[in-house]
Length: 248
Image (cartoon, rainbow, N blue to C red):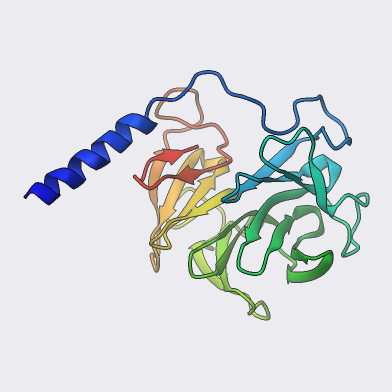
C-alpha cells in the first residue's frame, strides 16, 4: 500500500510541476528576421531535439537542414543548402527531420522532391521515393513512420528495408472524415506502445491509431474549424508526453 501511495504522489507532483508553464519564452534558434544567413531561418517547419538539447530544423524555404547547438548564436547547415533542386546533395522544401541516434544519421522528409532521404557524414541515400511526405517519426524499435499527404495515410517501414511499400498504420481509405480516414495528414508522433498520433489537418483534429487498429479515435479537436477550446484549426505539430497529455 505504501509503495502505491508513493507512486501516486510522485506522479501527482510530477504533473503539478510540469503543468505550470512560464509565460515568457526565449528564442533558441533564428529570431533575426527571414533570411539565409546562419543566424536566420525562412519558414522553419519540423524540428527534432536530441538528448544534448541540440535542435535540428527543417528550414523549408532555405531548402536545408540546420543544426543549432544549445545556447548557440547561429546554426550549422548539415544537409542541403545547395539551392533548391533534386540532386542528392540538394533539398526542395523539406518539411521534417529526425535523427537516427543509433547510426548518427539524419532522415529528411524532402517534400518537394517526393522522397525520404538519409544523410550520414555528407553521404546521401534515398530511402523512399514517390511519396508526398510531410511528417516523420521513429519508434524505440527503429521503425520509421511517414505521413503521405496525397494518399492520406501513414506508413511504417522497418529500418534498412525500404524496397517495399511499407505497412499502413493509419488512414489509407481515401480522403474523408470517418474514423478510418484522414484528410491531409501532417506531423505525427509515435508513443511507447507504437500508437500513432496524427495531425489530421483538414479535419481539424488529432487522431490516435493504436497498433494494429483499423480505425482511429479522436483525441483532440474534431468539432469543426474554430478557435474554441474544443476546436482546432489546421493542426500541425503534435507531441505527447509521458503522462499522455497531448500538445498541438
